[in-house]
Length: 201
Ligand code: DGU
Ligand code: CA
Ligand code: CA
Image (cartoon, rainbow, N blue to C red):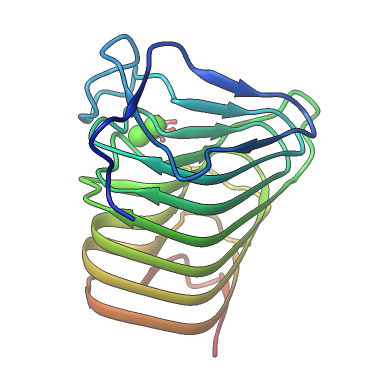
């Protein structure tokens, strides 16, 4: 699904409350200038903020991706299409409880990311399954210079034209498990410390 002709302009971040499901029903959303311009400024706001245990499905994010989607805790994201990623697409934020977030991203596509698609700024067990990425910097980045508790389970992914890396982390104890990953013209497939536990199947 491409960006529809009449996107819903998000002027104020949409919060999905704890445990609730936001079903976009295929609608396209784009950020208003209040949230940012979709460039590389770090001060932009997300279109969606998911509280712990929230889900989001059947959403397209169109021309202005601003700071994408912020996750505070466990989250499930299904059938998301980000056609023009802004500063980044999905960020796992520190949640007040300091507990590891379980995040699933399934059946989704991401395109045109100047830099990162998935940004992990807090301990996360991440599952990504059946996803396509095209024209990006880095597909998954754990927060720069940070040690953390990160498990990345990546399966059935095809990624094309990645100018920096597929997975990049500075975390010595990183765990990565992959299955059926197809990388075409992607630099530095796994730019991770030598001590990382990398299982590529
Ligand atoms: O130390 O935390 O790029 O969430 C650097 C910052 C930086 C974040 C990240 C993000 O990693 O701002 O967009
Ligand atoms: Ca950033
Ligand atoms: Ca960001």
